[in-house]
Image (cartoon, rainbow, N blue to C red; front, top):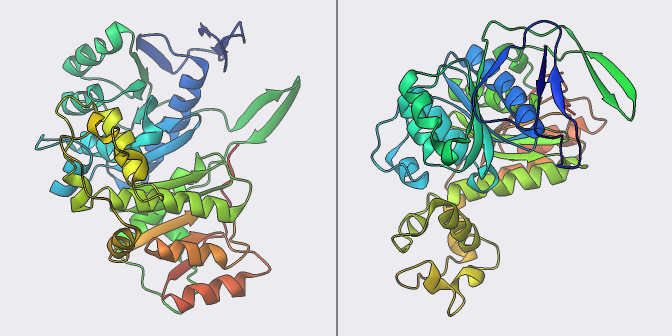
Length: 389
């Protein structure tokens, strides 16, 4: 079966389509997906399906350019997180909680994303989706009122895709680059608590919450463009560093995103006096500037701050930020390949990491273990590499 697309990765790449022997496992219920939309949708759906299977909780992912900006399971949100994610006092279903968490992990990167859900989309989740800027959503089904609401989004052009939850692809996958076909077995490695049994550090403590978060981080990496590192906490990713050529750059990038996630919950950020009609994307951009390393000067320049705020807020100083971040701990980190140097652990520790899962196998494993021991970090060698391209 063949399904025509608008174009390929770019508008000049025509024609474009997807095809399969037999029936397609997806049905487009509304809108018209593009090439990258479907790459995001199908990678994202695999991720959330595995999260759901591993945790028994509904899962959601926010995908952008074939890597997740965020992924989460359906744990309830604290009042602080509701404020941080602009939810207010809304009542949320477990699936909606998963989506709001996934979207809130890195709101800047999630702007214009494609959403993946592990379970049938209910009205609560559809309402949460309807408030945000995104290209579309894929799920194993949609309740009638949820589909009706989403079909009106973006002037009726919002992409809504249903996927057969019973579909299982062939164990061999193929792709073509420059006229040459690459063939490999699908990565069907199961990621669960058993991969964390080889703890190599002095500290052996690994609470159930850390096990859950390390599984979430690892499954997320399985569908993230490599090299990649993922920070997770409280049932969701809080920083994904994707597609970097060096491991330390992955760790730094993901760590910076993790720090921003924590800083967004600071009372000074939650109390920013935004003008009433400032939309969510503008608020996200404003908060990002306010939390930038240049001590808020960009957003607080004379004449500029008046566009965003009813009154000029006081700057958020580096010392205030560091004091806030230092109170956080219990962050989990997973890496898709081994840490070649202990500098990755040193950087992770600055972002509150207390639990690490990585394949191991570096000639400097002892150096990495020593760094963990200095900071009282529990680290497991999984023996599983998770490269994805």
